[in-house]
Figure 1 (cartoon, one colour):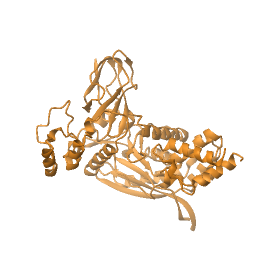
Figure 2: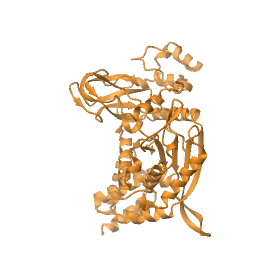
Figure 3: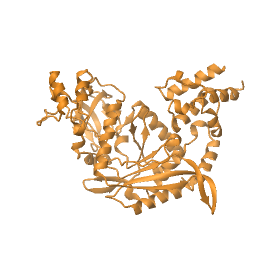
Figure 4: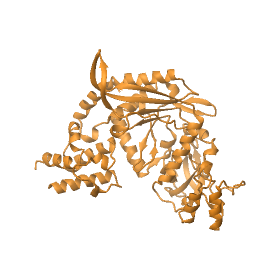
Length: 82
Length: 391
């Protein structure tokens, strides 16, 4: 997957959790939890959804690397071995 | 033959709109079946039946708004109570406090109010100017349901709140009214007392890290699950905090059904029950919370989930405030609040260390308990959270 595809996937999964979210409103440095008002359960569900779609099981200790859109994209790119 | 009636689904509900029938005349039903969907101020709720038999007559058509207690359908060969015993007292307690009603009586069923509708002078002038009869403006949002100028404008613009075609979904202004009515009643009727306790989360955090490290994402649990279980188990030691105050007396509940406060996206709050909270495993509680959050947001909660809570627990999560002090949801007698976990200096064995802490609060009903009991309850939660492996 390209970075653009990973980014699009992350935003798609967020939109399933937060249907009113406007994916265009997020920039790479933004904290996803703030931009899309994700609470602890929402974020846990995002991790589950990423696991379902990419088979990447993100350890809890790494959650903080996925708080920003840029961080999440980079993390998944590395995890997918690209 | 027995009657299936519009249930009261909360301290604030006066009427509901039938949105969908899931059964037809001739269908066989049994206790626990979801037979209809009702639109309330708190969104669409799936209504269960607690009778068994055959649906003989459907008396209220889709789209009609009727008061609580209206017969919706008749059931032939009905056996079993009209409602589960746990719901009956809750409903009985919901009846008083007509003064907080945010709405005038629904017109299709109830005869026109004999007294003049409460209406502000500005609203009356505007209504007259528009050649509107104030009594047809069904939705007053002012004090004690009085009609304000804004209500007239809304009505005039064609957005007739109460007459709008029924649809599934959530109306945030209605939700706000429902919350306002319940919380106003609570603050007026319940003499609250408040206690807080700082709880060391070192053991709980360490344990949860280890637990989650071995699990796939879907099996992992949130700290809130430990909070929920500890709050439920501690009630076994202080059962006076678990139950309902109604008709001037407290009735302790025999089971612990914690109402779990869920913030809805875009605003609003609902606290459906997780049944037998104290007897569920942590994994079961996590699954129950996930399921409730999803269904609360979709509008697929069931009637019994709204009527059965025996206490409420709210946890603000990792982006909330440092502490939260709740308002009791009548006829319950207590609400427990967990703030955001924070790292703070803490004295351990005479030395200052950085320690994860959470502020736990209790708001409880002075008609039932005193601060002594409340303090023991918070101490029990703190103690239980030091042994997370036993939760």
